[in-house]
Amino acid sequence: MTALRRDALAIPFWSPEEVHSATRQALAHLEMRRVLAYPTETVYGFGGAIDRDSVDALVNMKRRPPGKPFLLLIAGSDMLERLDVHLPSYAANLAARHWPGPLTLVLPGAERRVPDRLRGPEGGIAVRWTSHVGISRLIRAHGDAITSTSANRPGVPPATSAGEILSQWGDAITRGQLRVLDGGRLRPSPPSTVVDCTGRRPRVIRPGAIAAAVLRESVPNLIGDA
Image (tube, rainbow, N blue to C red):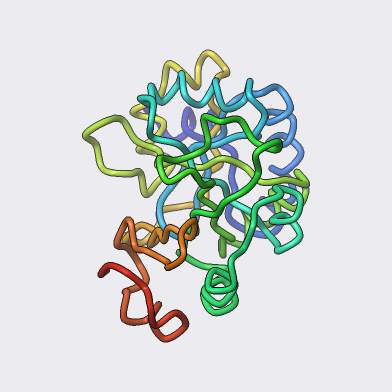
C-alpha cells in the first residue's frame, strides 16, 4: 500500500490541530454505529459507541467469541456516573492514584446502561480512564464512554501503528465498516493492568503496565501478582 493510499484511508490524529480536525469525522462514524481504530496509551484499539448496535458491529468485525467482553474508555470521573457503575472505596483509591493511565477496573453496576455483551465473567464492566490526550478529547466530544479492544487479528500482536491496521483490515476499511485514526507509531508497552473490583477485595486478573507491588501502595489487601 503506497503512502498516498494510506493517507486516503487513515485520518491524521497526531497534533492538536489534526485531532481537532479529525474529531468531526470520527463522531460522524460513531453515530453511524461503525468501528473506529485509534491510538491509546498502550496500543491501537478498536471501538465505538456503547449502544447495542455499535457493540454488535464491533463483535462482528472482530469475531469476538462469547464470554470475552470489551472494556470501556472514559475521559473523566463524571462518565462513571453516566455509566452508573459503582466504585467501591478500594477502587476509588486505585483510581485516585493511577487514573488517567494504564489501569482497567472491573466495576459493578451499569445494569440498565450498557448491553450485557459488555459484562465480563466477574459480573462487572471493565473501565479505564485513558491518558491519551487525543482520544480523551474525542471521548469528551462524544460525551460518553467508547468501547475498546486491541486492534489485531487473532494470533497477531496488537497493532502499534496505523499501517499495521490498514494492511490487516483493508476489506473492512473499504466497506466503510472501519475508519482509522493515525496517531503515529506507538512505543511498545505492556497492556493495562486489569483489577476485578466486584468483590470484597481487589484482585488482579490480568498483569500489565502497573505492577501489583505498586497497586498495593494504595490497596494493601490486593489479591494476585503482576
